[in-house]
Length: 435
Image 1: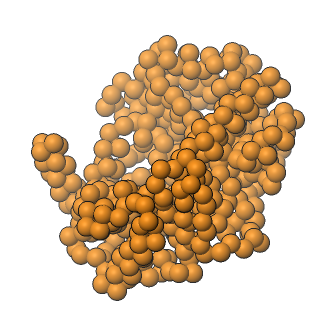
Image 2 (image 1 turned 180 degrees about the vertical axis):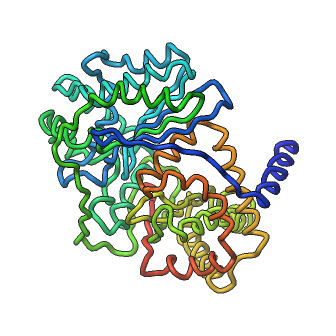
């Protein structure tokens, strides 16, 4: 443990004097609209791919929630030339790994493979983009899987309601209020005809970003991408447009719910927050670290060590490009829920007035820089970061600016942030009672 701390200190200290990241990215676009980013390096005999589709739960219509996440599952149900579940078998057989995830902003699929196997991945991804089988059998199968996931992750899990209810209370647009997994009644009322329409609307090359990072020759990979994706046609003539719908529902600033599965009460707070990639977003990352990211953080020391009124404290900012939120969650000791809320708000007011110390800021910077630099050792992490930034920020090279933007944050930045965003008007409080 001492050795790890020492290495952490040395690496972090070194990075404070060097913010130079020169991650080289080449790009090109196919005639069908697929945007491709390539970054060649030969640090390890691996290649990572990420394929981001510009569709998340924020794109879903009222009464049709859950389809972005449902389609994450559907994409492994088989296509014209690939049997159901075979995508996993192909990649596992060559010693690779793969997965997918859905957020409010996008749906992403990724693989990490030996560098000799890239052609296989490109064939698999192009085939399901072009010819996914969307039929009643596959749809019903994955609909059942998703509903069971909803039960295990939210409905039948202690504290599972917190994120669902707090999102509903806090977001200002309909697009972000509902969870990525969707609503039970919407899934129950869904059908395969709409699933096919959803696929034809969003799963097209002109609505996707492909990123490839690792051990390859750029010219060779360009040829392979064109070989497999050039023939993929857009199933919809018109590229989908995202429309934000302001919510007309009014919610009180505070709400209480009962949780029959929880053993201890809990509280959750949300604040309106800056969007992903903005200048204030980087300040919020500092604040997250200062408030509760380790045992020496302010709220951990206050609530768990000193006052002994809570058993956990965590949270942070989401990475949404619109209608973003900063969260604080705490599982409290019995009868201490109101005291925990009081102490959290008192500490926020303290920072509003007195700010933070230079030492706190420097430590937060070291932690974030160290974590980010470790990520850059991974081809997969780099592929995911570039794809995400290309989609949300239209800046695939933003990866090169992360450290310098962190360094620009000052003690005044943090104080100004608290005063700007963490106001009573921007806050929602959710109390979770035990039964």
